[in-house]
Length: 231
Length: 251
Image (cartoon, rainbow over all chains, first blue to last red; front, side, top):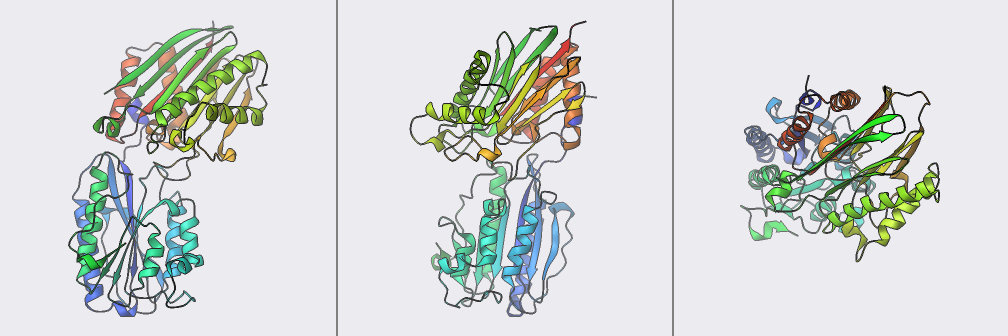
């Protein structure tokens, strides 16, 4: 018996939670690239061996239904299944699910590094009943977003977002991030998905290798045109 | 790597006590050439002892000063309790005293000085345990648990603290009357850089194991504690500070 017998064996988790739009409009190239990009991210994170932390990834999809596609798990144990695109865009309900996960200390312990929430969407939330031309402030009044922004733990998370194509609602994505120092990435087409997840991966790796993994992301997005980075 | 230690022993009434304290600069601060932002203190008077630990909030520019002032404030409180100006059971008064005294020491924005604080005031008739923020106090009296365990509600870097808008509901204080015939009292206070790395189900076992090791003067216990704390540097980059107090009725 020694003092080491009382310490936690596993390194601290650094959770990355993905909110993935799998509505009908994501069919074709978009969903294919989304599946590939997330798979590559998980694979990259799994190849890192850092004693101070272990990466975890979870995926909540919203389309025909809102569901936990991948429970939050250590990246080296994840066996991803394909996401398929169909249905509407119940993003608000998905915010509720992600908030519940983050507020649950059994799923994300207080020992964890601050989680990152990543949102990818190509359209408007179909469970938002305000104007389709809503401002950022109007979106901030949306109950689903207010829940995310005011819940004790979820409100502390780092949030990143990408809009794919011209139908993506940038004001909604800005309201989701709700931090003027973090840009929304707006890709003209599906090809940006891969670059976006490379940025998420590099940012996450950068956090873990920095002196303080809880420090905010300082890496600027790379691989995008200037007009795709919206502050 | 900078390490500060305290080793003390003495008597309170019919009890022998030992105190061991340690504060180690975390790797994240070593790499960035930032000083250890934790502070800790041990103080004895005719009635008993005070032990306290404060963890300056990393993102605040004057948090080292904040944690030093927090320890000074508790020492002042201890003297005032001894003088009888504040009764040990006056929780609200104690809380308000700590907050106002700590704030009165600061110049400029109070938020810059944010710090957690955990303390134990120990006499032979009672103990007062209290504090705000992460880090934990484990306490046993003859193996009965009186701990103020983790009230962390967020993640590893976010905590309640002494700051400009203190949430007084999150500032806990409990007084425990000691049984007249108790034999052993153990108290451990640690910052989250240490307590987060302990298995939840084994914290009291850890306290009793460590206390026994110190009380029995087991070989190299000081070195063991330093080495063990150093080993936690591989798990997180936080500053790491702890104080153990163990007291046993003299035979």
